[in-house]
Structures are given as structure tokens and as C-alpha cells.
Length: 223
Picture 1 (cartoon, one colour):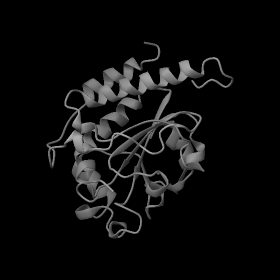
Picture 2 (cartoon, one colour):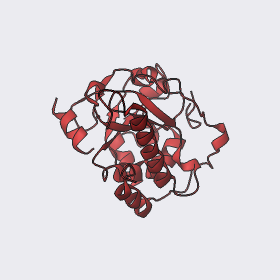
Picture 3 (cartoon, helix red, strand yellow):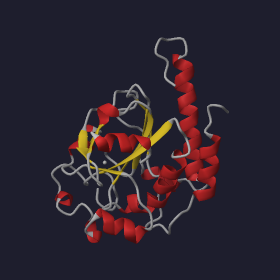
Picture 4 (cartoon, helix red, strand yellow):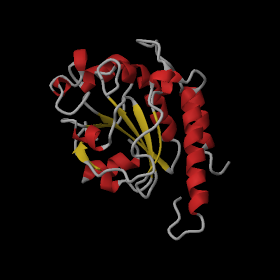
């Protein structure tokens, strides 16, 4: 992960996966060029996905968890606009979304005012997936080697982060503003057939502008 992960590291239900100046033009262009899809393991159906999220408009719950490549992630350190991708190797929908998530990570890396993290979660707190969270791959490293991409990963080893974030579908994407408020939520990018990463980057830019406009007259404006 960009500068955010560098700083933080110094201190990372089953197949159905249920339980303008304001526009980062460079990021959008990069997303369009780098967006790639994999053959889906199952054709995603947008109608079956949740469209609402319990924490939208609320403060992101505090959590700490290990980072896959070492160190500890602390959500208290989030002080910029951040996209949080919540996923799991055990989840077929997450694996289908994986190339899009990787393209999203690369696109966000082009925006100096936006960060990206991913949180790998078990299927549910206390589930057997805690013992085999990476399914047939056995490890996160083996999965990424097989998939042909990698992501910055925070590891929810016991389901506590999933429970705190009230995640009932994977993959889920949360947009958090610098004041720690969850500003938007969506599920699988892969259900959008036309340039899903570029479209999501555009939606993120629109949300950032809307929040900035809303708070423009208040002290401590959000950038």
C-alpha cells in the first residue's frame, strides 16, 4: 500500500459470500487502461447483493489487526480519504472481484489524496473458516501467486474486525472520509459490466466533492 501502509507498518457465507479538480483524472485514466476481468467462477447477480450498510454515515469502528507482510494496522491512524476493501480468499465472489480490486488499488495509487487498504476476513466470527481462511490455496501468498496479482492486506484472524464493521457480504467496499465517517458502501465491482473500476473511482470523486461542499462552511473542512 502506498504511503499509508508504509507509515502504519512502522508502528495489514462461503461461496455465496453473504452472512473536475475534484475528479482524480489521472486515476480514472489509469483505471481505464488497467482494468481487467477474469472469467467469473459464477455469474454475479447484482439483485442478490445488499444495497444498504448499517454503518453508512457513522464513525468507522476502531480496530487493530496484523498486516500480512508484518506490522500492525490501527484504524486510528486513518486520517485521509480511504477505500477499504473487505474480502476473503474462501469467497468465490471475492476471487471473481480480485482482478478488479487489484486494478482499483493501482488506480487509487495515482491519486495523492486517496488511500486503499484491504481486510481479509473469515466467513463469520467463530466459523471453521478461521482454521482454513485461505481455502484450497492454503496461504495468502499461494493465492496471490495463483491469481497473478497482489494486494496490501490487513488480516482479520478471528472474525472480530468483520463483526465490528458489520460486514454481511464479501466483497464489500467502504469509503471513509478523513474524519472517520463511512461515506459510502457497495458490494462486488464485477456486477457492473461497463468499466466498473473507472465508474467506482468516479463515484468516489463525486462523494468526496459532495461531502466537501456540505462541510465547506463549517470549521475543519474535509479535504
